[in-house]
Image 1: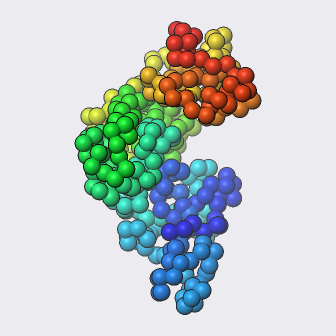
Image 2 (image 1 turned 90 degrees about the vertical axis):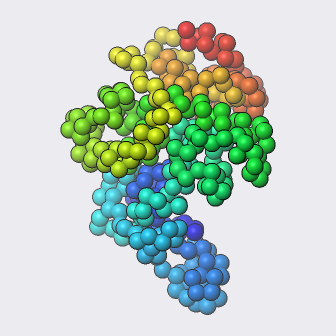
Length: 331
């Protein structure tokens, strides 16, 4: 399938997705069309309204192009909640077992917005699903090195790195675990509020309690509670593998006088602790985390095998700290 170059949210410019795509939000909608003519199988560009070979008109599908299930309309933008019920909209597959949805949920779970599992991108997820090693996110925690080594393109180091990256998420911050689940309306900000308000009791919170939180409304609370009810077994299984780290009680405001206060910091290389944990400590010290080195970067935290970020930092005269120096400033 190919995405048509049309239909973004007029308020926030979010691409509106045809299928559930948790890397944006499970209920965002974007128009798609078949990449091949259904009549003669000729390739089609995203802009063609009819097949150039047989003149067959290519319209919007009424069923999911991945799983064949009936599609439903969405009526709002889930990034900014703009009401789109009066506008022409696309269709979204509601089938939670849809192969496309399962794959996207896995990709999101492992992404930087989720648990940040390095080495588990689109292609790897697709390969693991195709050969049957995984069927959902919980299966990631039962992956065995010997099974990975049987797959095309996998060697010892690659398999070891993936297993380590998965294991490193077992004590992920609670808010990041909540965010990785891909619950509609519950992104990074909402996940942090929930984690700070309830800690590990968030899974036992009532809809009434959640609705009372600042910035929450009945729609968000209902979506969160609905997900918990529908996915009890999944969450139970995940929590048997993962022990999320709750926020520190009486969380202090970010420091304004520490070494990292107000500084732009970039991390690179392999670090001894999960990157999310280090970022959380740095942010608590008042640092601003950047994803790439620029002229505005103040500090580069350098682990093993740092790559091109180190070279760029050196060329720009950015201060470079190893892990020993990092933790000495955090203490």
